[in-house]
Amino acid sequence: MAASSETMLKKPHVGKKRKPPTRYWEGTEEEGKNDGKKQKEGDNNEQTPQQNNTRTKKGGKRGGKRGGAGKKVISGKSDPFPGSAPVPEEKLNKFKRGVKGELPPRPQYKLRDVVIRSEAASDLAQKQNARYDLMLPEDAGFLEGDEDEDTCTISQDDIVDAVDITAGAKYFSLTLSQFGPYRLDYSKTGRHLLLGGRRGHVTCLDWQSKQLMCEMNVMETVNDVKWLHSEALFAVAQKKWLYIYDNKGIELHCIRKFNDVLRMQFLPYHFLLATASATGFLQYLDVSVGKEVVAICTKAGRLDVMAHNPHNAIIHLGHSNGTVTLWTPNQREPLVKMLCHQGGVRSVAVDKTGTYMVTSGMDKKLKVYDIRAYRPLQSYFLPAGASCLSLSQRGLLSAATGDIVQVYRDVWGIPVTKPYMAHRAKGSVWGVHFCPFEDVLGVGHGEGFTSMVVPGAGEPNFDGLDANPYRSAKQRQEWEVKALLEKIQPELIGLDPSQLSQVDHSTWEQRHVDRVQVLGFDPLAKEKFTPRLKTKGRSSSGKVEKRKKQVAHEDQRDVIRQTVEDRMKIDKERKEKEKKKAAAAGQKSALDRFRK
Image 1 (spheres, rainbow, N blue to C red):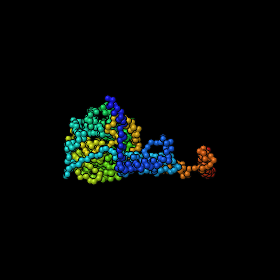
Image 2 (image 1 turned 60 degrees about the vertical axis):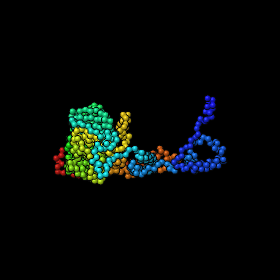
Image 3 (image 1 turned 90 degrees about the vertical axis):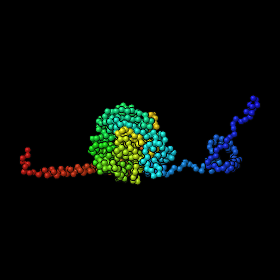
Image 4 (image 1 turned 30 degrees about the horizontal axis):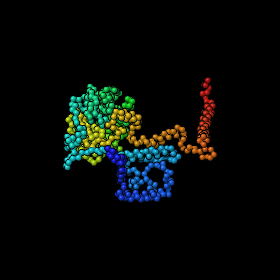
C-alpha cells in the first residue's frame, strides 16, 4: 500500500496542457511555429531596453497580443475577415423603410440630432432584420408532379400518403349534415377554428389538437361568424341582432343597433368590427370600448359581399349592379367606385399587400385588378362562375364552384390555363378560408367542414410579437395590453397609409389664404426679427427677448397707427356724406307747411 501511495504522489495532479485548436485562418503547424519563433525573438529584442518599464506596468488590460502596428493579433495571425459579415443588397431592400428625408438646417441642431438618431436606429433595424432573415428555419412548400402529370389531378389522399403524420393529420372532415351549410373563420394565429351553421349551430375548437372549446345552438339563423382580436371572443351575426360570445359559449353582449347583419370583417390593428346588413348599412363597432363608431347608409341595397384590405383597412363591398365600392369610417361617400362586372358581384378578395383585388360575378368571369391603378390585369372565364373566393398569405387563390374547390397559382402574373389543385366537397360550398401560417384551406359546405392540405399556401415563418401560434395565456394577455395601447384610431384609415407622415400642403395653403383674408394682411410676409449678436454681456437671453419685444411693439404700433388712420378716413367720409344729406334736406319744399 505504501508503494502504491508513493507512486500516486509522484504523478502530477494536473495533466499536460493540451495544444489549443488551430484557427481557420492559420496555416500549417510549421508556419505557426516559425511565426511564433520570430515573434519571440522580436519580443526579446524589444524587452531588453524596456525591462524596467514592463515590470512597473503590471495592471495592464487583458487581451490578445498586439503587433507593432497596434492591431489585435490572435494566435500569431490577424483576422482576414474583420468586422461584421456583409448583408446582401436584396435582403436589405426587402426590409427597406422608405426613402430618407433631408436633414433640417444646422441652426435646428436638436431636431437634426433627433432625425439622425432615428435614421441610425432605422438602418440598424433594417440590417438586423435582413441578417436574421437568413437564419429563418422554414421554407414555403410546393406541390410538384411527375413527368407529364398535372398537379390538379393529385388527390388529397395521395398527398396524405406522401407527407409525414403531422402534416397528414391536417386533412380531415367533420360530418355536420343536420345544421349546415357552414361559414368558417380562423383566428389570427391560425390555431383556432370557428364554425357557424346556417341553422344555428356554432362551435369553436383548436383544430390542430382537435380539442373542443365550446359548442351550442343559438336556435336562430346564423349568417356569419368572426373571431375578434383574440381567440377568447367571437361575434355571431344572427337573424335579428349581433351577439358577442366568449370561447366558453357564454353570451356577453347583444348589440341591437346592429340588426340584419349578413357579413362581418374585423380590423385587428384598429379593434373595429365592420358589418354589412341587409338594409344597406355599413356599421363600425369599436370592440375595445363597445361603442358604435359610425353607421353609413350605402344606398346600394342588400350587402352580402364584403372583404377588407389588410394593408390599409379599407372595406370593399360588392353590389348587385356589378360595382365594387371602397369605404372608410371617415367619409359618408365611397372613396372609389369601380364597375367590375356586367352582372352582380358574388365574391371579393384582397391580397395581404393591398396590391391586387380578385372579384367574381354573375357573368361567370373571374377578374384580377391592380388597386393602385384601378385597372384590370387578367380576366378568366369559369363555366359556372365562382361563389366564394379566398387568398392565402403566399398568393394562392381558392375559388369554389358548386361542390368543386379549385386553387390557382399566380393569377395576376402570366395567364393561368389550369388550376394548381382541385377537390370535390361533399356538398355545395358556402365558405372558404385559408389558415394563417399553415398549408391548409378550410371549406365549409352543406354536409359540414373539410380541411384541405394545400402545399405552399401559408407563410412559413411567423412574427412572434404579432401572431404567435404557440403563445401561452400569459403571453396572450401581455400582447392584448400592448395591442390596446398601440390601437390605431379610425380617423387614420385612408387609401395611402404613407400619407400619415407627410405634410398636407394644399390644406395648409388654403388655411393661410383664409387667415390673410380675415386679418387683412399676411402675417408671414415679413421675416421675424433676429437680434444682432453683441458683446460684453449685451446678448444675454433676457436682453435679446427685450429687444425682440421692442421691435414687436414698434410693428404693432405701425399696425395700430395704420388702422387708426383708415378709421379716421372712413369717419371723415361718413361725416361728409351726412353733411351733404343735411344740406339737401335744408331746402324747403311745398309740403313742409303740412309738417307739425
